[in-house]
Length: 303
Image 1 (cartoon, rainbow, N blue to C red):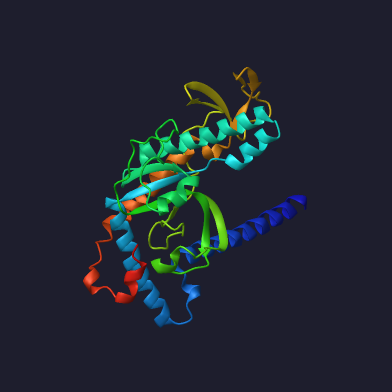
Image 2 (cartoon, rainbow, N blue to C red):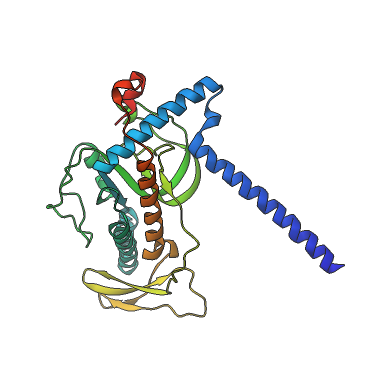
């Protein structure tokens, strides 16, 4: 009797899990197709034609342009800790953020080949938008290198963020700067690609890459990352409780630093490789649109 009851419970759970997966897929499809934003077939067809032109133009521009990877600084948190005199914790958080940024940079350098790629801290975003093209890009030690100059006119932004069922459609450039993108956050993903105004791109452009879970590579419980010439052991999140955290001495203080598993080089690399493949495949399927034959009403969205 107990075994029969357990079987029934198991199949019920399986049934509800299937519904959840179906709903999640439905949500995913909405992101790419946006069909529910349009009340009739004519409106949808007009939007479909527009997004095909915009996406085709963007992927061809990116191929000869640049991808700017935006890295976080955790500056507010670290400054607040230092202001309270919590120097050791501030150092710990700084090292952890640096480790994440180094892993991210290495992953792009090793796996992204579709276009030129540059790295900058998020607090340079306004300067980039206003036309600054030097004294803001980072070298492999996370230092701003004045010798790195971005000569490409067209660029897109990539960063870890939430993918959205966006609240805005296509926005003409003359009003893009004041448009704030909201909407329903679907999930946090390793890579979201945005335009220079920070708006998430739209399908069919492959604007995000999720995590790859079926990896064969094993992630160690400790990884060593060199920061400021010092090889530092970082404990990987999700360690078994039976394992002892690896510690080291930093500025004369014994400390342990940690990063989540999804911020390891192996995990980020898999997502970057996937995005690179998405972009290459979409580029192959998207010849540059003939702008002389494009609906003039679509031209203000090409930026």
